[in-house]
Image 1 (cartoon, rainbow, N blue to C red):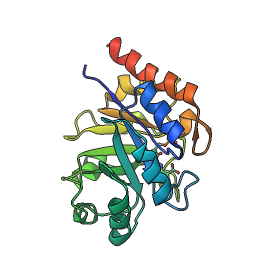
Image 2 (image 1 turned 45 degrees about the horizontal axis):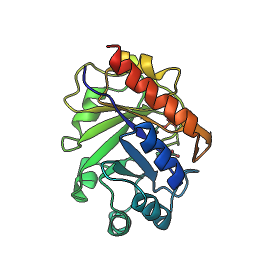
Image 3 (image 1 turned 90 degrees about the vertical axis):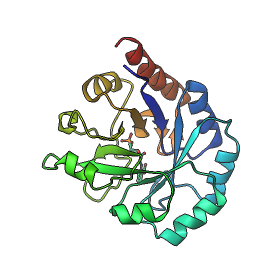
Length: 210
Ligand SMILES: O=C(O)c1ccccc1NCC(=O)[C@H](O)[C@H](O)COP(=O)(O)O
């Protein structure tokens, strides 16, 4: 079994980003969505990214943000990947000409393969829980049995992951990576360094046992 990567999402403070890196996280997520309690300003994001050591992937999250506004963020903040959480079409995502992840919120009635196939140029898909009116960061898990075994693209599993359930999630879905936000927080946007450390260790432990 290959290494399962780990992204800590919804970072709003440099100290939390550094705690994630120290714990062994591969990536951090910055939410550029004003209605989120985890939203960061361009200035905040710039100072977090500037404080990171090398070899940490920085991911910017957007929800139906106009292209010109995303370009403004990109001009100021060096992001490695974009993550689209809204109703962006493949053409919308491709228009930025940057590597991107498409977040797909899964419902029981969805054909997940068809959802994924609609984004042929996405570097990966992030499968998250569908909650009406909430584009992400719900803290709720979905039925992992809905994820087909082969999707032809790296799968990042998200939605309600915690120290307690992440090993089972990896065993069942065998994702490329896992993504967590609420499960490692003290309060929305404020990460708990001990929970982050334990979560990343749990991901690494399950890899080692398989
Ligand atoms: O975190 C938010 O508030 C948010 C708002 C709008 C779009 C995406 C958002 N977060 C995405 C994530 O943090 C994660 O990628 C994912 O949704 C998992 O979150 P959680 O269930 O809290 O672990």
